[in-house]
Length: 125
Image (cartoon, rainbow, N blue to C red; front, top):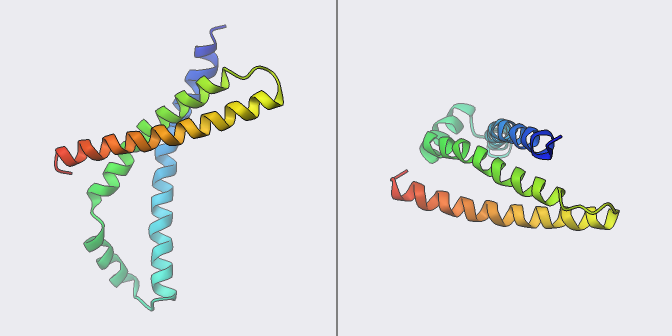
């Protein structure tokens, strides 16, 4: 069996599908949590919170975040799978490759986010 077809593609495809969904859920949970904090600790009515939210956050920033999510997922999935295929067969090797995978993924996500920022700034978003 081809390890790319059996091991890598299903995991990367699942991550590319799941991460935008998790991004959406996380964004909605953050907005809802912010509303709860504003209501209970700031005595702000929900209508005022929503009005101020429209003033502070544009829909474009939400769209940009949702657009970046599949690309970030692709980078994370490829790095994780490539490092996972380098595991030698011991628990020590597994731990080392997991740490390497996390460090590389974080670094590449930061670099990719910077490239997206440059791109979106150049097109005026």
